Length: 317
Image 1: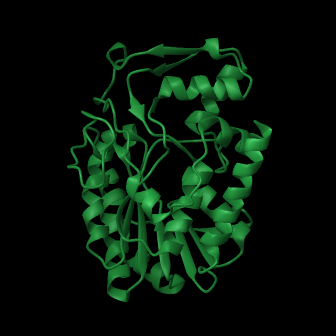
Image 2: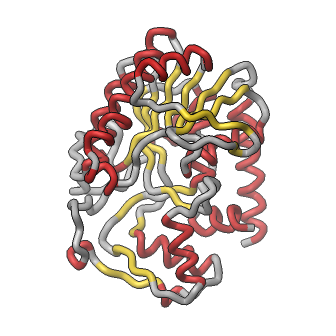
């Protein structure tokens, strides 16, 4: 096991070096830099030290990986335009969103303003000035009625959050070089200064508290670090259009957490299974939004996407 992990680590660092080699002269703006994925993006880009990096967040200031974060409200058109002109980025990696499904459901106007209209403004600025835009979308743009969705499959989100992302995707695709990266369920320890769902679940398991997860809801999970490195590689690759960014395995949340418990030497018997019909849900949840990643593999044939066990070993040691 240790030998295989060392080989994978070598491949990961080799891939990261390839990813950033042509980003040296670029000014890169990361929106949502205080979020879970955005924090990993900032860390990977800063560690590489190959580009000038600008970090934005909706309301969070301070620093991330030693670089100051600027608070920019994507719903304020004039302030956003001024901030973009000042930053003058060559590339925007747009990871900012209201991503909590309950928040979008209970505050739909705010969810639409940030997730759709904010993206519209960024896309318009990038399109007018010939700048690249990478937009992070989601697997829940699909209805979950089947497995292994491809990029050209019809969307049909059942969650309000998914509907905002589905509405924003065409805004990015219509500009030259625009890339929509649909990202599956992400896992791993937080770099954002606040616990993620994954962190809270593991903390409860460490405290000996049973945790319940759906065994009939399937996704293709990917660890945060690999997701961030993949987006960097796609930026270097100059890819455009639509691409699915996800892991290789189709698993339920229950299986994901069972495997996480074992690799982290926690009691897997504390990981319990239930079904969606057993839970009282404010919105229906898609049963299966596993993503086909054939296009990703063709764009980045040497990309290493580690197993759940290997990814957690690398992230926690």
